[in-house]
Image (cartoon, rainbow, N blue to C red; front, side):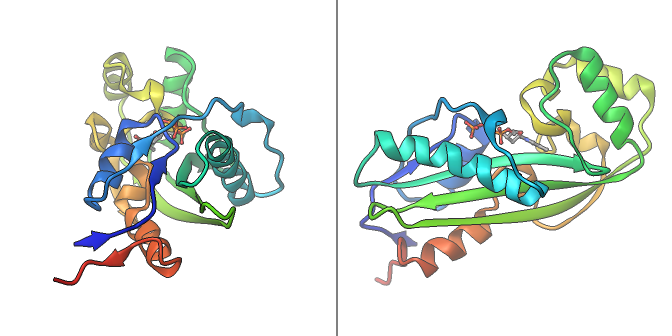
Length: 197
Ligand SMILES: Cc1cn([C@H]2C[C@H](O)[C@@H](COP(=O)(O)OP(=O)(O)OP(=O)(O)O)O2)c(=O)[nH]c1=O
């Protein structure tokens, strides 16, 4: 469907991002970054998440010259607060209790760094409304182990889908990579083209 003459690297250890990028049917490698995400200072959540995505992507760009690097970061924001990946059972339960019956925002920032150093960043936002959750459902879900590697403490693509009443925006953005918006940027930057037969 598409073609590229760029060597593309995904700067992510997330299996979900790998799966989503695979949907473009273009070859890419994975190189993960080792940066400390907490070092980013920003005045808005959008700037914060962009800063983290850029930090990871720049770190990988240093290790992989002559390539186009794509990196991302996903945050869950409720009531102007960041709900990080839960560190333990209590924190996972507390995140889900807070989100129960309410609407929160999932923001994913994407950074693209081209071989000449050109940087593109953007943030995509999806609103997610949770059902009113019972304590039994919250505990059973937390005890499944699913929340711990995920921002906000749930995965919409796994059993966490049971928590979700509705969403407004791109589903893939919640999973970790707004593929349609990324595609638009890759075409606009002429990194990928339509492969006409
Ligand atoms: C809200 C939500 C988050 N997540 C995941 C997406 C991200 O992988 C993770 C947020 O953590 P990130 O720090 O964005 O990503 P990561 O640490 O998994 O991977 P890397 O930094 O190497 O790219 O939460 C889901 O899988 N489903 C969901 O519904």
